[in-house]
Length: 287
Image (cartoon, rainbow, N blue to C red):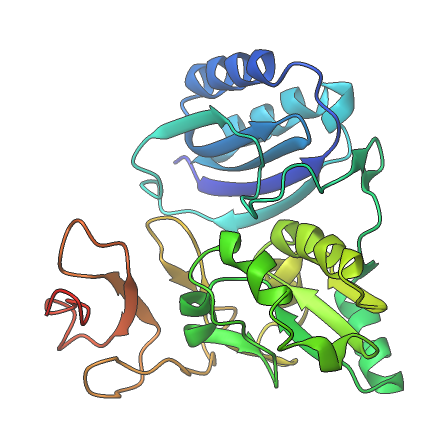
């Protein structure tokens, strides 16, 4: 019986012909029966694909045969077989849409001028030696169901709002302090850390591999609390059966790690909901 698996990966590396890479990646995924979402730009690739384990392994092997992608960051997750409705492979100005494509500098080693990368073990060593501030590099709805202890959670609904938020002055008190950025798989905080360095933050770190790698290392026995929001049909994952439920239903305050879109189809706002109120998720604008 085939075992479904999900592969999460990214690489910041110069790509001379992103559209040629797009065509190759689409043909490769279609030949292997994989579905998911792949974004490509002149600065690299960011993808999440799922399918039967042997085919996902073949996909990874073939993709790494392309010299620029040989060292891309890779993480594995359990799949259900229907985690993605379709295959989407697109070229974009940014593989993470911070709205600052001209600011990011990438060479063959990755992002230039970003934060210092920390493994989960190195993160614990840093915390033992210094008072650090966690800085969430995700959207606020993601942080509602899971976050690091004591983290600063910017009030943003998408990554394009981060630049203005950083420049607002509300985090200036952190510019001379150790700050650890984190995100789901490591890619957003890799860009975010460079944006922070460019704006005067002097001691910036990033959690290499993101929450996903940290959870695989420490489960729910470390500094992480709650569930991890993911952008596929799973919606969220837990690292153990003992995961803390920190989200609260928008309607009644009941503990929940479930999120749902606003009941108005034209609206993209999301909320944390419990089972009782899952069918009535209209936001204030559409209630």
